[in-house]
Structure formats: C-alpha cells, structure tokens
Image 1 (tube, rainbow, N blue to C red):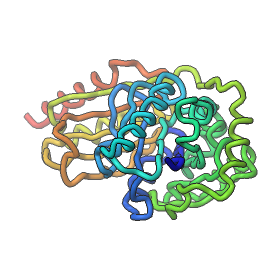
Image 2 (cartoon, one colour):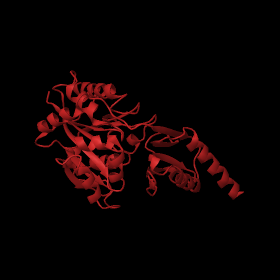
Image 3 (cartoon, rainbow, N blue to C red):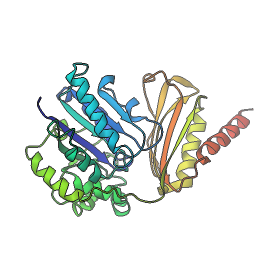
Image 4 (cartoon, rainbow, N blue to C red):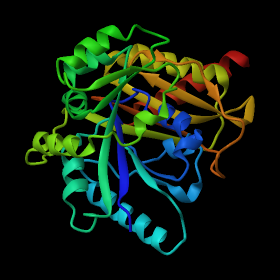
Length: 325
C-alpha cells in the first residue's frame, strides 16, 4: 500500500485556518482528501463550517491536539486507514487542522515516530496561517504562535484585504528565515501550497530537530468557555453582546466563534467570528449543517470567568425585552 501524504495546517487562534481549508477543499485538485479537525474546547464547530464528504471529516474536540488528544490523533489516523483498506472510504491524502493553541513539536514526534503509522503515513507539509491584522502582536506575546512559525515550511499571511502583510512577514521572518510567505485575502490560496513539496524529507529532518523532546509549551491562563442554548437570540441582543465582549475583554479575548440561531431568521444560522477586539460582520449559512440548531459559541481567552458570558447575554436580553415593552 502506498504511503499516504499528510499535511498539517496550524496557526494561532483566529488566523483563518478553517476559512482557508473550506475554500481549498472546494478545489477539485484536493479531491480524495480526508480531513481531521482538532478544536480547543468542549464543543466542535469547525466541522460544521467546512463542506466535505461527511465520512472523510473527523472532529477531535477533547482538547489541544499536542496534549490531551495526541494519542487520539494517531488512533484516528489508524482507524481511517483501516476503513480505507476495507473499502469503506477512499482518500489519497490526509490533512490535519490543529487548534490555534497547538505546539507543533509533539505533533511532529507523534506522527513521525509512531510505530503503527510508520511506512503508512508520511508527514510532508506544515502550513501555518498568520493573521496580517493581529499577527505581529501575537508573535511578540504567545509562545505557541512562535513555535508554529518556527516549524512552517509555508506561511500563509491571511486577511491581507484588511491589513498590509509586510509587518507580519517581517515579524515571522526573524523566527524562521527559511520559510516561504504567501499573501491571502478571504481565505483564498493556490491549493498547491497544501500539497507535498519536492523536498519533504529535508523538512521532516528539520522538524524532528526542532521538536527536541517533544514537550508542549503553552501560555498560562488561557481557557475555553462554551455557551450552548436552545432559545434563539434576537439580532440586536447578539450585536450588543459581541460589542460588550470586545469592550470588556479587549486583547484577552483571543477568539470567539460560533453558530447562532437568530430569532428573526431561525432557518439560516449566523456565523460569528471574532479575534480580540475585532469582530467580522456576521456571515450566514444557507441552512443548518446538521439537525443541531442550538446556538453554540466558543470563547477562548486569558483569565476568563466561566459563567460570565452567559450571564452577560441573559442580562442584555432582559434589557432588550424591557425596552420593547
């Protein structure tokens, strides 16, 4: 059986990994790709935001890929290979989208040195997304982002429709002068960037050297809060809620994303994306991607109080209802 090439797509929180992957998988050049998605938090969202054959899309939501679910990753790949051998699914390559807090070192060691995967799967590409808006500040503060850039054999500078790519490239170049940089607007790229490069073996040797003992490094104080509710949210209440989050948390609110059932349009879920104090305009899906129509929001940040977002939303809704009466 031929070795299956594997691409890891990583990058800090809110840098555009899921948007990039969603656009890339629509390209026929990536037909036959099985995707494994890891998210930091207790509920999964990214798999609902990516269109792919359901049997070829696996979500790992039990923790950070480089820590709690590193073993889950190798087991999941082994299970996919087993199903492929039985003819239950067909794929020619694997892609892994990590959580935004992933440290590549233990991921590289797990994929390259696992006895069950040796000779079956080959780690050949490490693509890192870097946010042109927040990237320079993030690289100056978060060890996870620095490590991701250090391992990159390709850096895709995202959101260049919102900010100049040059400051982000300058900041990243000091961490990894060997990597290549490509600018991307709205998540669109040449999908060949996700395919194996000619010198994949040389990259693997460098990754293993960088990985050292494979221990993950993480910034202290970062946590995830999930907000799940069955009741729809009024559009004005959602707007006020997001504004309040941005004002209260500022740069400590590293990532907000989710699907929201809007009371005025319950059949078309709103997609929420926010990074620190910047929230993108609401996007809308044509329909719910699954039978689950609950509002699901994930907040990731530093020093977040677990029950506070739910209390904030409830209080805003009470004020909105009182103003309508």
